[in-house]
Length: 460
Ligand code: ARG
Image: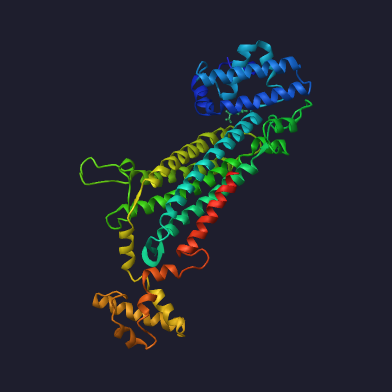
């Protein structure tokens, strides 16, 4: 019989029971549910709303339930409506009528709003740790490649020379912002909805500040309707996770390209690649492809959350039960992806010779050739035009700017001297790009130091 059977003259149809039930996916919040109930029962006792002996018995009973779930002695009843009903029913089974006092001055609406905040707060901390580890892995790899020259691209066309470290640290910067977004989300959601009741607070003399404090929140939510109907934090987290996945997906896409014979800039460790069932030569970057694929799924979770909320009147509506599967799916997949990405990246073999060979073709020093003339006094637009003509000549004659004879240069303008070859050498081109945030080894080492210092303070 349902807890609320008093109001009804019939049993709920079994299909509706199964349809309504959320225990299959909200059971994972059991520790948070029990933690919230312990705080609530403690406060009820302190405020004299229930006897302190009963409050103590409830707290003990809840601790016993927690231990039994953790040890496996107590398994979830799949017929329970949700984790909140399950824990309460179990408590009453163990304590008799004292157990029935736990739900005084509380509703499942503020209870679920509390549980999900507590749960997401824990998950955000875990995800931040994973992202931090990924950033450290990227920094370590970058430290080994501050002198590894590769072509930088725009429109996927070779554009200007950079280093592999510089390219890698671009991803570290994205992840640094992801960490910031996760932290903002955690900070903004750190208010306790407990005591909002079903929607309109309660007539009991509860102390919401006390439960907020017991549960490590900064404050109670300021409006009881908002306390039970707000799921902004799910959307914010969904957004932060979607963007994090988008970054991993862009990185994955590049690794997929770099693994191809067309690039061959890197080679994945055999433990992080797979073969083909028919083509014996194949070594496929499945991990990165799956990450790219799962990015769509996490974005879908965000869209689910936004669409679920957009038409809801205040305050709680059962639609909101749909928040959990979406945000849990996003969390699970992000954790899975980052956890797999880290060792895949740290075992990836980098092939600097191939990067350098690619950098040597494609005229990526053409800007530097124009800049050479500018430094000798020519306006940039004229220098740009002359260099374009030289590039066209190289292409026609199968040459590069490095192998084009000095006479050909001087035919265009006598400003060209033998020192042009030094000016357009890849090493010079990279070393001289020492503007703040640029690819020169010195500038990249500064960037790396700053990132590592940031990681240290963030950990503190
Ligand atoms: N299982 C519900 C959820 O996840 C808990 C809240 C139910 N409240 C209610 N009034 N039906 O949203």
